[in-house]
Image 1: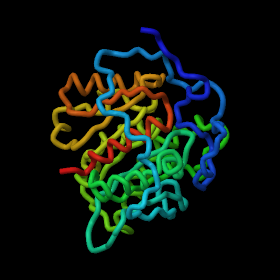
Image 2: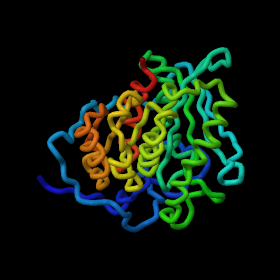
Image 3: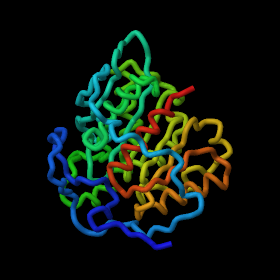
Image 4: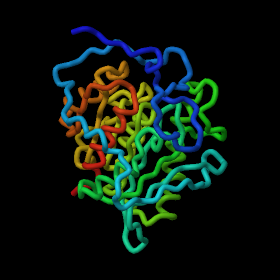
Amino acid sequence: MKLTTLPALAAMVCCLGGAHAQTPPPPPTDKKPVSSEPKGAAPGFTAVKLNADDVQNFPEPPADIAANREVPHGKLEMVEYESKSVGTKRKLQVYTPPGYTTDKKYPVLYLLHGIGGDETEWQRFATPGTLLDNLLAASKAVPMIIVMPNGRAQKNDRAEGNVFASAPAFAAFEEDLLGSVVPFIDGKYSALTDADHRGLAGLSMGGGQSLNFGLSHLDRFAWIGGFSSAPNTKPAAKLLPDAAAAKSKIKLLWLSCGNKDGLLHISQDVHAYLKEKGVAHVWNVDSHAHDPTEWKNNLWHFMQKVFQP
């Protein structure tokens, strides 16, 4: 089998796009979008080597999954919270589903971005609220609150300059997430607050964060997803040192990556460990690279599984 490496622009630990504005992208044009991702090789990328079980276990979604259809729509808002660990106000985006009311409680899904992104990245790459609006209209998902925070826990949390230098701030986000973000959401929104109704998923650097934080705090998160997880992902044995005890707590553990992604080996290692220890999980290796299509497609599938009885 011919080994495949990523092009220079795609060979980044983060998501495509680099430092971004705080607004959604302009309407599509005929021009091919140009990445503002900082140039240069990123750590961790290797030639792709596929194993026998590195296969696509979920079909390619329809092309119109993110279409703005005439269905009931949820609400997307940018809000601020006080970060105890960072010592400043920080921003995050929150989606509430159609018909949201304080008369009932909702599960909460936290979505974490890549090293070159911010709290707007998931919205720009995958429009999670639109995906969910369409799935809810088709009775294929559970109404949920979606929270998209900034995973760079430092006072200047913009993706500026050498974005790789901010890697320690992504590790520090664990304290901010657990100590400030989750309590803020639990207090401001009509949220279910137990692990069985709280999910954590992310792309690239955010995928590594989701595995690191989620599997270390199964008392807080029972639904976990890592899409194209980056080298910040802890070694599998450290993620789940007591795999047997974790089995009863995990409701869904989703691992996905494209077969053209030079970071595939990160997820392969986690998958191999989980398989050896008999920990149930989803393993989906599709035909994409380290790109928004990979993340949008797997989020669409993940949304149909998360919080389901």
